[in-house]
Amino acid sequence: MNYAYLVDCYQKELRTKVVSVKDDKFVVLEDTIFYPNSGGQPHDIGKLIRESDGEAFPVIYVGKFGEVVSHQVDNQGLKTGDEVKCVLDWDRRYQLMKMHTAAHVLSRVIHDETGALTSGNQLGEDASRIDFALSEYNREEIPGWFEKANEIIKKDAEVNKSFMKREETQNISGFAAPSPHLMQDFEELRVVDIKGVDAQPCGGTHLDSLKEIGKLEFVKSDNKGKNNRRVYYKII
Ligand SMILES: [Zn+2]
Image (cartoon, rainbow, N blue to C red; front, side, top):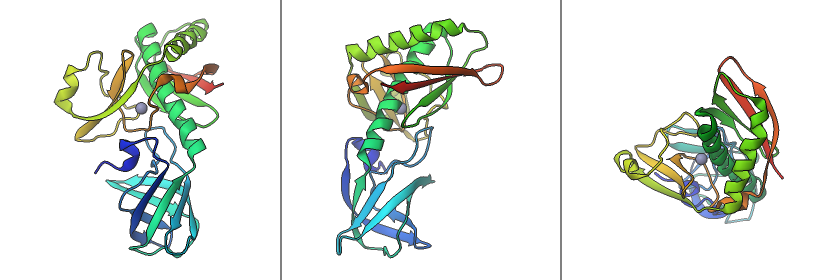
């Protein structure tokens, strides 16, 4: 099933129903706007508000187990069948959408400049990092990568999200090979296509347009092993 967070990344509230509650704190819902911790993107937080009495159940962790998204709540008493309104901590989610969309742009620039593929990443609200596989590089070139990324962002581009069969992705020009970065193994691929910039499969949450990112700033770089470089960035 394609949960609401994958269909509309800008949906901040959702009315739905409790399917099950385990140990009085792990809640499964019919549908959800809460992104579960995965692929280097941290889970959303927020609350579930019970429709019958307005009681709030803060959501402190969200994980995906198989196909099931489980919400850990910090208040007891929700029951199967309860109708709830999901409310996201939108400021946090929107910041992570900016960081995430920026990761696609940076990965593309680093790949175009060096040939290196992204090998991992970890997004954060304040700073994020990208790892890429490269044995030799010149650190002095990194600020230039950020200049290029910022030019692309300033120029702006639409970010399309769609579900496609694997074979259909062959028609997208410049489609990146599935990388471990943010890849989830759906039968149908969710393709994130930044028009004219980059297209690749990804199960995270993204902006609708590049210019919403604002401006990226290079923070620092590290060597993490012989063939692994790490670049930290933030949004200013
Ligand atoms: Zn992505």
